[in-house]
Length: 448
Image (tube, rainbow, N blue to C red):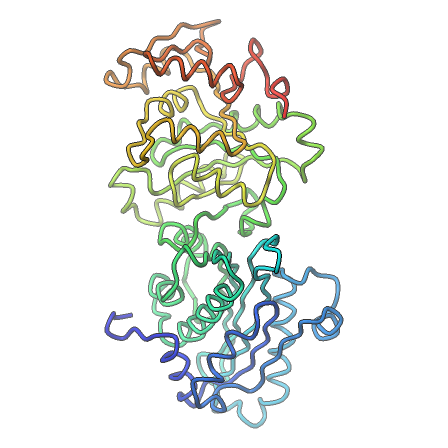
């Protein structure tokens, strides 16, 4: 969509009202009727709004859409969408079906409660026709609300809903155009879209995996997950109260990302953590923003290719917008309070200590503090001297030394140059860095 054609939320809602052929219903639960309100207040609403409803009471909602699902969930949204669509067609198809492009808009949202203790997120869906009497297309998306007040979150939901209805009629030429229109007048500080499903003739030929990856690469989400079973769930559903092991890596260097790192680390998780969790989960994790310019412009197809290659190794992949471990762990802490374990080959530990983190005012010390105050452990897996020397450049190696035990170098066998050596020994002694080998303290020994 050309920059000159961009319109504000008010203009978008008004243009749809004045279109004369777009007609449908709104059903919203949990954050007011913020989407419908835009169309009701800008004028000309009778040209667009057939009905608007807000079934806040649980018994009323169950009577309308069926019981047995969580109220803020994809199944509840789909039940709402199907019910509203069938009702719309049943009431209006005979009289307006030959002229109107019908739509049913629904959302179910958990906006900030009075105490500020809930997970602020929701589901939004739209079923619509591109031509009167044609085949329906559908958009289902999951959002995280990041504003600090209920009022601001409601406002963001309203903007997103108007954008969605507008984009499906005016910005559907390709995925990039569609997502840019969908996110207009919003930022990641306000709202994230970390799950998006598109179906029907309006989206024919669009690649589901590439769109999912583009939510991160395009700046619409902090992270998305590609589970090992291929079912693209939003992070909050997959990560909730899980005991997590993540193996971080870089694009183009996935040969160092071994499933064995995840498997053996999962096998050594403390028993107490497993009792408190809803199960374990191992994932590879990557970020397009690795600091290497060529990767920042990597085609989305190549990103998906790397992701799919990793998934074939038996574990899912988490794609993060931010490249640093402390940023990744901050995101993960939204959904689990259990300890997070990053399983890294020894070279990853070396690079973690070498990095001066010049983007932070407190450089290396601030990075370490940010990471380990978030209940994180780095689990370092041994490497041979040959492997270690292969990946450590001469410049990086300056001042470092190591020796091998049984042909391998373990975390306790590394010796950084002073004064970093003092810091490194502290992290080891406090079990913030753990060595994955039988001759040193195990994860279980490190306690909770």
